[in-house]
Length: 206
Image (cartoon, rainbow, N blue to C red; front, side, top):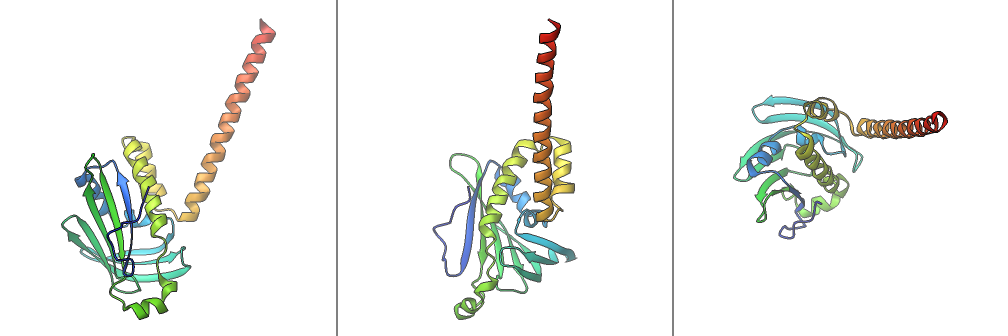
């Protein structure tokens, strides 16, 4: 599961580390897929997303973790081991994705939110603007990447995740998950009822 990175300055940054079963190239390519990786964050409700140039976007979200609307532009910069998103407005100035190989195989994805561009006194006065969604985002990505590794070979599942699930608002995903769960339970009950009925029918006939 996502875990803190012990080597960072807690005053300026927030971070999570996500273990994965992907190779370095595959995970690096995933990190460059915007807005896919951002939309997986269940605490960000997207209102708009517009390309405004090469690796340059404008977006507006409702951050459910702090209840605030955020509208800004971001630029994507390639780094040696991942990429960095630089925001034009807001308390958070950048988000960095780093892909690091693990000694025993697999890779880990390190996501770091950087607040160092704002002086400490101003950060303390604007604490309500801190994006507290990062731990939840790490959990969302951990689950998503595990599922993608297991099921992406299946075209219908892959189509559903990319074309239906990812564009959904977080509330719609929760409702969809609930409907799917209820439907599965109804199917299980139906199969059990049918099984009992067939057993009872066999006892009458024989």
